Image 1: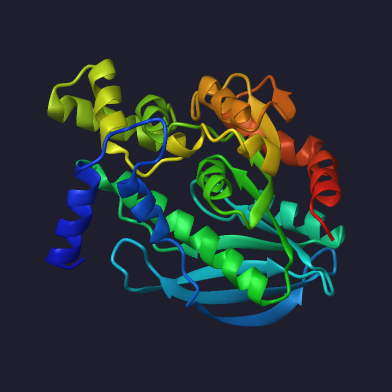
Image 2: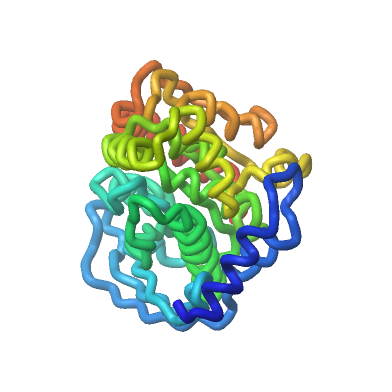
Length: 309
């Protein structure tokens, strides 16, 4: 990032505080994720296990932090003739066999499925707390650029399925982008700073220990520091009372979760006006697996019933 761009964005991040509604400074950052100037290339490579044409799509768009071009890769499961699509946001670690299963289930129902397979992330830095804002903007832009691509290629109604970190990112996009009105969030949560500070996910726990020791902080002090450091977050958008009226949401919540703490999951669930809920009396990873094994029909039926044709 150039020095001027860094100085500008740094000034913006330092100039607003957490509040009930998005500040003009936060909205200005979110607006940077809108990109009507994308280009794309799509190729069909094979048939999926559900005999859906499966291929790769490469989108070149604007990276919102620096404004420079960057590439997004989609793994796409087509449903020929469909005007409906679901964007799939994977958990930490990227696309996996479970995401591929979700895509196969959806395309077998005649719903186009696109997995956001990769996009440029900010390298994790033990002491640079800007990483959370940068990653939040980049993931939000990836979702919105994918929605732009889908609209240009015949999709009229767009849903989103997010798991874990993908659900946090997807919930943010669902709140700010009115092209996405139907969503399923699996072990997602609200309050990125609080979640990162409390998470027992091994990498986050290790990062927390390193920081707390280096900065001589207690757990409460560390939580406060992350709350103040994370500016690009869904929380300021979550109080919008129209969300429950405009968005159809199915939530799958793990009741024994320490990776995305269960209270944060319930906090996200309540944003949507207490709509459809599936609870799992298990931890984070087991709930992710069992969601695909036990609730695939419920999730696919939810999209089938709520995505307009």
